[in-house]
Image 1 (spheres, helix red, strand yellow):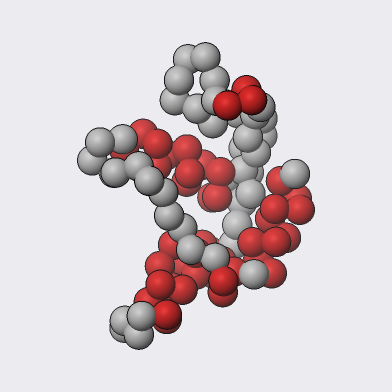
Image 2 (cartoon, one colour; image 1 turned 90 degrees about the vertical axis):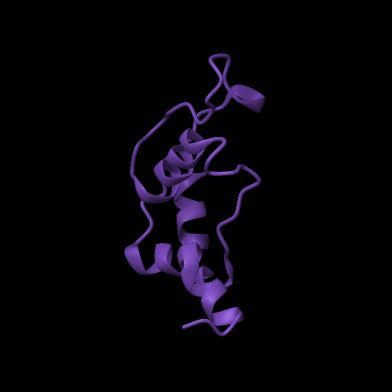
Length: 85
């Protein structure tokens, strides 16, 4: 539900943190998938790095979040919560 997810992320952008259990050095390609989902308007793409597809084998859609929302999610909310300038 890309349109609903996009509206949710924009509405609650001050409450969302980006996080993953992948280490960027061990799995840098996995971050490209997250960026593609959050930052692009790509439609109907495989989100898994595995050739057999991900769990459920559904496709992903980009949310094309606005820059301000991405800044909040990627680092702004963390900085605000922990009083980092």
